[in-house]
Length: 618
Ligand SMILES: Nc1ncnc2c1ncn2[C@@H]1O[C@H](COP(=O)(O)OP(=O)(O)OP(=O)(O)O)[C@@H](O)[C@H]1O
Ligand SMILES: [Mg+2]
Image (cartoon, rainbow, N blue to C red; front, side, top):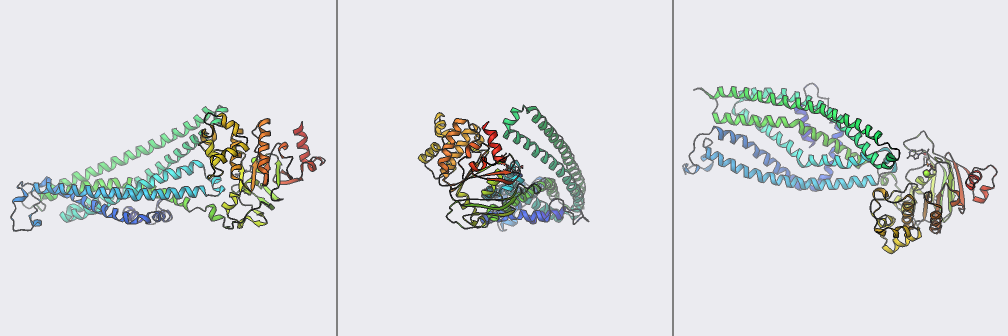
């Protein structure tokens, strides 16, 4: 592919501008070349496919030739009547239209066979390769560190996986083959017409480079326009996606018309840009047609002169073949800009995909590979942290705390104090910028990240379920669990009764992201999930915030059971839920301002916790 593109670039690069390469930089081609790694396992089949491609393309060259001979042929004697003492090759008479028609028939049979095998082999290679790339890309995505998802929009990521793959797929399956076929036709035609009549060929070729240069310049311009339209389409898709994901927000704020007008603006822009690029495409196509037909008429006129009269230098049927080659070549050249544009797009898409595939996953970043038996003693030592995307906002400052195995530690503090951030650090979604985080006295850097997370369960502030049944969602905590274990977990999480009230029970579909369950129900499903996982370290981020007083009591009971014998971190706004904690850390703006048990803290005069407690009791 690379070689072809280079060849093409060289062919159509205007002279004197050798260094200028629009878009197709060496770097991007280099990156795109990594796709060959995925083709490698199928190189045998791919190679055979290429043989059929070369065969079918070369056979295709006989078509204009024979067609010309057929049009210009005269004799109608049957081929069988030739003298028998000559070899069969000598018997072929291109002036005999029956012979030529028969040869055309044979040609079609051969070509259909070649094309058939080319298509099925290319399809096979492409589909195998695409399966491998899809698998690899998704597994990369899923293992990306958290910050990757802060940097990239979900919509863009999904488009990478779908549209880029489709582009690459089309290219591998058809565009390359098509491109190569056209190149063979162009080169073969040039050779043939030069042999037939070099004078006429010169006249013809004089028109081609002019057209080619203009076509390339034109093509670049059109590509720029369609890129603008593509960008506009992407941003309009983002609007759809965001509104659908936040549909409850859109509706509660009755912002339908606002979203609609935002969307209307972008689709108007898409329309404008597409029409603009379509208009220019129209100009481009008419230009090609005009020049092409102009050139053909001119050449026919010239050529006919050469076949007429006693001193004719050209046989009529060869002239017809010449014309056929010219027509075929013209069509091939005309199709090149579009093919080139698709290949260029595919290279861009491949580059994207390869960039994604080559990103560092968590496995590349977290090098630790120890799998110790974890007891669950956790300590943070002078940890400071800011989010990678917002380096100017210090979220945690010099945090130190320690919790013994099986201990319960509670985090309280105003919104934005950094409580959920601590949960993220505990799970190693991010790394502290300063300070150390260790478990059982061992720095977490040394522990295998999956091993660590296997021993943790997290009930997040915002529970998001997967579309599927309640049972599947609970089983997410331990895919090997059987039905009894799942039921037991649901009972412990006080979720059993509401699940049983659904007509479908555990088989109830929760809808996209769990939209068909209430906040409290979702939370209890998430708690059941955590119970099923049976972790050493438990992190609860406001796990009882979405519950009424009665359910809260039930869930609190469940949590108390769950917290037995595990190290637990409880983040809560409601102080009633954390009275029994071994230690309460009161946070303010990323710092611990008070530390102690509930009884110690409420007795502090003018203490932050004591004040909070006062407020909540009233
Ligand atoms: N992914 C992120 N990227 C950048 N900044 C973030 C990110 N998540 C949180 N922050 C910022 O970090 C600070 C602490 O946020 P955090 O979510 O830890 O607060 P919190 O104590 O859990 O608050 P709440 O009680 O409202 O849940 C906030 O100022 C927030 O804006
Ligand atoms: Mg929070």
